Image 1 (cartoon, rainbow, N blue to C red):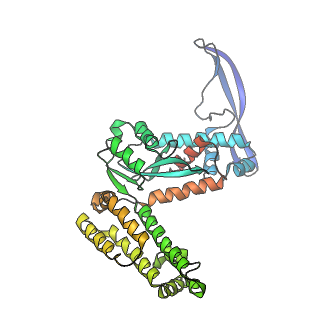
Image 2 (image 1 turned 135 degrees about the vertical axis):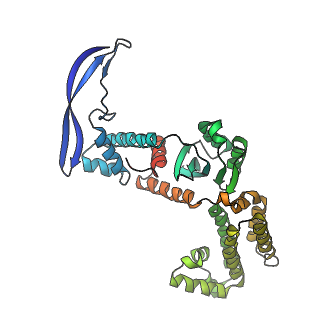
Length: 354
């Protein structure tokens, strides 16, 4: 390589209110004899865009964690596309600092990225509390297999626990690619199925009744689905009224509340005995949605009983919390059409700021 020329650039470094601070940087250009091109000298304090310092790029990235691209662009008097590029550079630096993941406990879930049942899979490290992979074309077994191919055979063999919902393709892919991993079904998804069974009972009772008898049930869906301790004073009064007015709803609600005890057992035998007693109490109650739910639990018992083992007592709320965070990211941007940008946003949303 040989020296070509020197060029002085004005590089934006910081913004203090309405004041913009620039640096004058002398950048040398080099004549590369290997490729025959003129290349710019690389300076560590410059961003990939040579008109901005790395410090300024990181400042833009930190602002974009809490604000939209449009708002940051207006605040800093930058082009929308420039802010997006600087934000992506910031997030790439976050991932580089976080390092390559080697998870032992993973959480698997899918998110909808647009209307029309378009899904992508998100895999999280539940020990470190951060998402580590976003991808796939749908929520099929082949898409789930892409995660294990990305992770590699060695690291896949170190996974000891996989937390997921009862979606069959996720389970089959995990059993094929990480057979040593125990499978645990997320209790929040299980309880959501039970809530749907309770709501089906509520709808059937509303359809069975007529006239003034319906007034106790109408508008009480979320009162019945909520836990009693989470209700306001007015909600508790409304719950007491509807349960007193309808015996079948009363039975269904008590069964729903009592089922949560299943997650407190530390031995599978005790948990199974509790479930069999709970299932036996459905006899003569004419609660078809509950009987269907009990049959589903029986078919997936191994993935539920895994929670009884002390080593599997992991925080299961992280995956649901991540889903809420993703929805906030999507809503703040009114939907993200650039999937690579959405991937970076999801993978860095739990990482510390630079």
